[in-house]
Length: 310
Image (cartoon, rainbow, N blue to C red):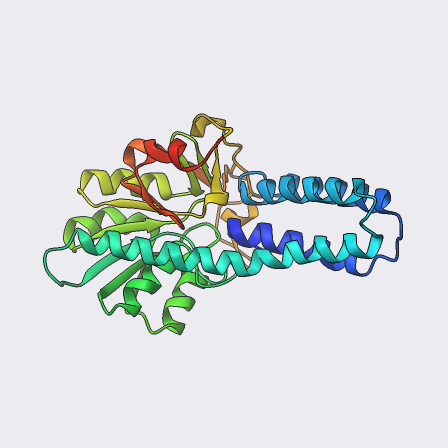
């Protein structure tokens, strides 16, 4: 959990391999290819729910195989081209995030009458601290703020790890975005008593039917949004869409240590001896999702198969 956010997990994991490769004195392409494959597969196993690292790994292993088999590629060429491919992930992620922000902003504003201001709710952290920069769901919020059409943001604390209270709240304050922190259990009361025009969340993995795995607590917010007729959007790059999964019940959910629930820092807040269940993510059914915001535009969940080839 030193690195969170599906895009950041992929980028940091791959950059760590680039650093190792840069410091590797090996002149044998076959050995380098074997080391790359083993280490990338290990990184995938560390964070199984986020698909971005798996897709990046597949692409990089294919690249390593191609470079290794090409007799015209020297070991130094191998390193330079492989590292350059990983460094390119940084630039592409920021470009994709800005496109997500633009498309999300346009879509949310279209639902308004006239040139009014919007109030948005978000869950967990999806900003610069969870990506290479700008952010996915927080990128949409950032774009709304830049367009001077954002009235207010409500961010949830995101128990038990408190990414919303610690990180999203920090980013919103840093960007001078008008915002209010609410605990996770306040969302129903918030929607019932105050105007919320849209919910925008991120995603760690999206199945081909549009079912979406995101930080635990997202599913219940989607249910509440449906009940209160609040549009519910998922902001995610195409690298978060896993066309190999037909539905969300195939997504492997990471279970985190119970200490995240029982302690705050070094202070125990739960009764000693109590059993705990701490899944890090839940799956929101596609039927609750208004649209999925990608760098290619905003799509209904059932249109993803047309967007991403299998």
